[in-house]
Structures are given as C-alpha cells and as structure tokens.
Amino acid sequence: MAQSDFLYPENPRRRQEVNRLHQQLLDCLSDSFHVTNKLIGVLNMHLGCSLASIEMKRDGTIKENCDIIIQAMTTIQKELQKVDEALKDKLEPTLYRKLQDIKERESEKIAIVQKVISVILGEATSAASAVAVKLITSNVTTGIINKLVTVLAQIGASLLGSIGVAVLGLGIDMIFCAILGAVEKTQLQAAIRSYEKHLVEFKSASENYHHAITEVTNTVKHQMK
Image 1 (cartoon, helix red, strand yellow):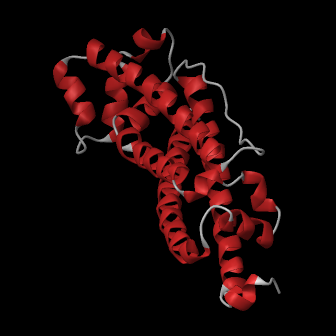
Image 2 (cartoon, helix red, strand yellow):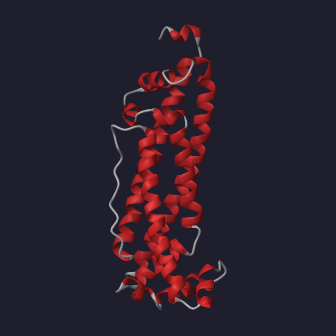
Image 3 (cartoon, rainbow, N blue to C red):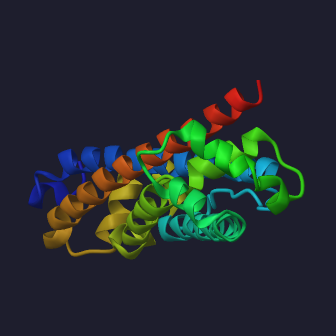
C-alpha cells in the first residue's frame, strides 16, 4: 500500500477507477483513428481525394492524438465542402434543394447526384454518388463529425490532455502518479468526475461516428455489387 493511502484511504479504489477510465479512453481514441482511416479510404477511392491515413502517436500525449484526429476531420470536411459546392453549381436549384430535403428518399438523391457526379469527378460510379449523398446530404458532416471534433478538443484542453498515451499501458500506479502530478490531491475527485463526464461524451460521439461511417461503407459495398 502506498504511503498516501493511509492519508487517502479511497486512493486504491480511485486507482482502479482511473485505470478503467483510461483504458476506455484509449479504446475510443484507437477506434476513432481506425474509423477515420476507413473514411479516408472511401473518399480516396470514390471521390478522387488524396488524403493521407493517420496513425496514433504512441509517444505523444492525449492532446496530440486528439489534434491528429481533429486535423484529419477538418481536412475531410473541406474536401466534402468542395464536392457540395460543385453539386450546388452543377445542379438546378430545385434538384439541389431536394438533396437537402430530409424527407426525400435516399435512392432519389443518389439518382440526382448521378446526373452530374461524373462531370465533377471526371469519371464516377454509383458508389461515388452514394458516398456523396451519405456524407454531404445527411448530418454526418454537420452533426456527427462536428460533435466528435468538439469533444476531442475539450478532452485535449482538459487535465487529460497532458497525459502521455504510453502511460496508459504502464499500469495503475503510473497512471495515478501522472494525474497526481498534474493536480493537488484535494482536486483529484473533481478531476475524476470531469474525466468521467468527458468520457461519456466521447464514447457517445465516437459510437455515433463509427455507426455513421460503417453505414457509408456498407452502402458502397451494396452499390458495387
């Protein structure tokens, strides 16, 4: 038992809780890297983008890794904005408005995009139209990705941001010491509560992001059959 445990008898339980929370955070981060690379692959293959894949910086901090994902998502959003602007330019206003109409059937939207996507990309398939519809005319970009970017930025700016990713695999005591080094012991409970709040938001945003991109890839597979 650590000496501080005599002064703070709740420390052993908190160590276990911190370890659990850190592992969940690492899982969410890893998943966000993986899903973002899947999205990058889809964009490169079907929308003619030339985006580089991203890798987790194992010797970096949580903030540095959050920033890597945020930068990738910002670049992705810019690429999608270019396609959206091209669609708006090439389509008749009434047809473009149909793309924004949530009541319009997805199959109809794909048919609309199919009319001009080859002009925009040079050569395109029905899969390219489906990707454009899924990512541009839904809430994936404006809602789901923006939410995840916001949560990642909040985590990076919090106490957690300064903790190294490598620490996550070094055991409970190393993690606990990293946190104790960043805050006074009297602030530890408040820090863990804040950590739990960020993690809940991150897990929710990450799961929504994962589901949305999986839906995109499944649609592409269906179109290519």
